[in-house]
Image (tube, rainbow, N blue to C red; front, side, top):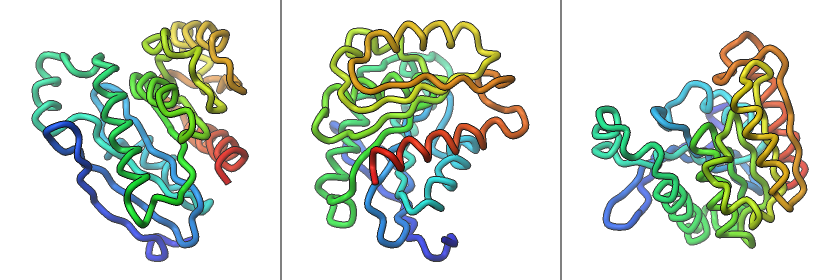
Length: 219
């Protein structure tokens, strides 16, 4: 699939009394969509998530990369950090995006999965727990599932936790969280990778693991 074969749209999603923005990519004949929830200090233009999303698109799966905060909230957060750990707010915005997918003609028939990074992974797990009938798979990259601790027992979607082998604190958090998720689950450790998977070839491994997981449970 080439970029020209996919339909790319910038969208605005109603969220409470405001709007959040996203980039929607719809490959031809797509049957599933993965919603990306970014970590603190990041955005839908994150080069890491953009790279993973592109590889997912090449497998015929749609993607929605969204900013869970408004531009104004992000500006405040850069100074005060007051929103980045408001996981309940981030999860609520992710639920809003999911409801938009379910109501929009071009996306309403797509099977939905989540890809969360860092604090975005906690939001994804909470949203998945709140929408057990709608979310069919979750992938976490360097996630903070500990921030979703009280919701983990309600996660019904098959969940893949991907952690860098050189990210020891987050690895401990993910191993503990895995014990509390009742759904089908797996922890994948990428040797030699740190928290952001910036080392050569490591993000490609993340993309391959995510694609395998989503291909199994969404398609």
